[in-house]
Length: 497
Image 1 (cartoon, rainbow, N blue to C red):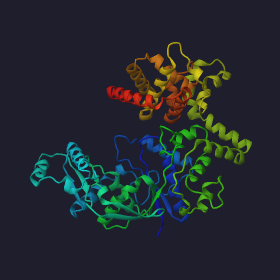
Image 2 (cartoon, one colour):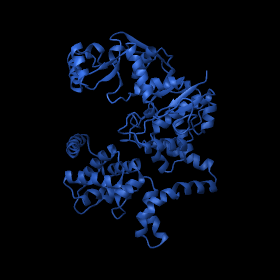
Image 3 (cartoon, one colour):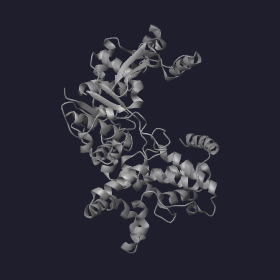
Image 4 (cartoon, rainbow, N blue to C red):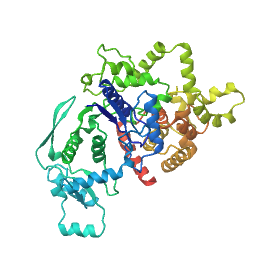
């Protein structure tokens, strides 16, 4: 048997360090067993998936030194490797489940589903809905079918008993079937859900081992059941511990930059970042902290993974990156690496149109554009002194702007300006005053090039991180303020949308 593992990211935003973390362990496991690691794209969410995001995922994983044997850019015998191109395959296997009686069409409306769940909660029961809860009278089903009303296809799930499955790190795991609902397999638009596509793809692509985040443990019973419905063997499961913020919460962009592109833009070496991710819950036999991918693969043993939540700490990453710089780069290599990072033509060509009109000689460039070649800026509370804005105005603007930017998908400068202006208007500030704290947060001064142009160049994660850094500098909201501000922000956001 050839060991085959996979990573299956969704192209709905910037490439996440969590994706790289899981991809690394899948690749190391496959290579250590002389097997194959493949990449497929889970783009069934057509409203959020973009070709640009897919390309960023491929580029970022390659920058980190991760390579796959098959994928959307490396055709193989198990393609296509984008789920959006496998619609006929999913329709075929959905029909198989309908024909063998292990799935059913559900015509329930969203309102009816909410009512059913509320009734179960009021009765003190699990909110997971079963076929018996969802059943409609035969004449009502016929009526809705004749009217062409939308339906979804759901899998049948036992109403009682316990599901038992094995995990490579955790041993035998039990989940009460009462907690598992009749999962939707095919949505009303004809697109599969993750659960159906995941099982069908893993089987057809001959995946033997699934290494994924522990957030998928509760989905394992559904997947095991689907494998049995199809009469297939299930791959071995290994649920990896989740990356955590320093406060032990799940790693999230609200508290920690999560984009691989952010760390690339900050000037971290790819070798150091992948080394650090390898240390997340795993260690070398000799416990040394600095090692290459090749050394990891040569010494890899999945049983050395610790289930304690690994902490993603930027300070520790910076320390490790410093080791890589000092121990692995000669002066000539350092100069080349720095030039590729700071002075590469692609990045420079974004900056030059902004600064060309503001300089008279080349020695003026560094003072004008230095903030675009920096990490966190050396700002202080005094940096935000303003003739008409008080400290609480600054704090409130930065917090509301941070919340807005955290959810923003469109990072185009014109869109960002429109969003900032709309939020500023809603908060009662002139656009110039509203943008002042953002200028300081992003550029270190209000006397700079357009802040939205700068944000577009810096990218989402760097921009968000600088706004959060600015908020920390002037003092974020207290718990009482945060509760009040969040309510106010939600009301403003709903009104704006």
